[in-house]
Image (cartoon, rainbow, N blue to C red; front, side, top):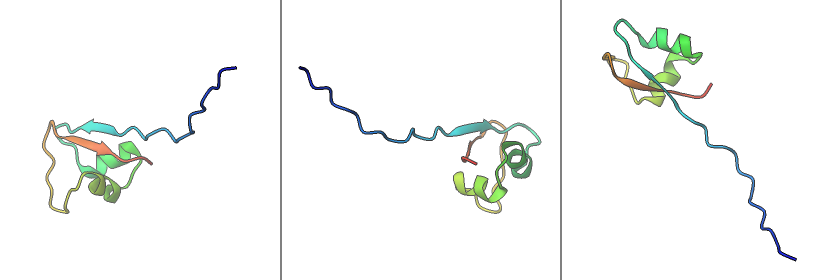
Length: 64
């Protein structure tokens, strides 16, 4: 009889969502749309309090 090795169950890796900044976007509007806090959005993207968003910039949207 052949032995079948069982793979250890591991949680699926969280797939990071990204968002491309558009003209007129603010961290507040992006965070609100994504359902996360501005603080979490800043933290996930290593943004300081004076960071400016640029159209075309990609932001990581943290898990809720």
